Length: 157
Ligand SMILES: CC(C)(COP(=O)(O)OP(=O)(O)OC[C@H]1O[C@@H](n2cnc3c(N)ncnc32)[C@H](O)[C@@H]1OP(=O)(O)O)[C@@H](O)C(=O)NCCC(=O)NCCS
Image 1 (cartoon, rainbow, N blue to C red):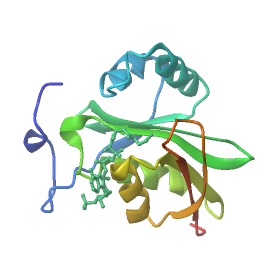
Image 2 (cartoon, rainbow, N blue to C red):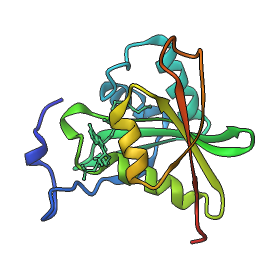
Image 3 (cartoon, rainbow, N blue to C red):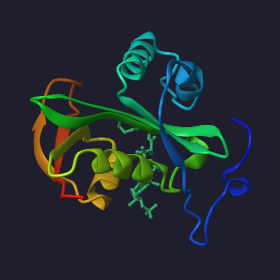
Image 4 (cartoon, rainbow, N blue to C red):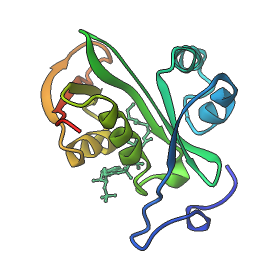
């Protein structure tokens, strides 16, 4: 990725204010380019399917993709964020927060779920900073690294 975070639009507290847009099929390549797992065939298929189904949102700064999120309502009928990924040079600038807040706004009065590996402290801290609470865990998805489930009860708009 060219360009440094310092080149991008930021406000006084150095947060980016990414534009959040629903992804369309032509966005697949730039979305996968920000993801360190973007060359993995399973990840590609997951994101391609999410885009086709209208379940993938991207964060844009000065027209370039800086992060993306996949969410749907396939988790026992509840909204669930399956993936949130921010390009490494654009982390700690509020991009994931902006993506999550956007999805929260789509599901007023619902319980929004997500999950992350216990070892992923950045993701756990992100969820905690957004007011998510732990809601159990799943063993054996990844060996010796439980998947922690989080929930946030969303208020009305
Ligand atoms: C986890 C991830 C999505 C966070 O994205 P981000 O845009 O950097 O997150 P934000 O800037 O919105 O962070 C919001 C808050 O979350 C917490 N946080 C985020 N990353 C953190 C880190 N590496 N260490 C500690 N706290 C962190 C902080 O409280 C942060 O607020 P602060 O910067 O004011 O302290 C990003 O690190 C990433 O893409 N990781 C690789 C993919 C991944 O693991 N995704 C999650 C599982 S699908």
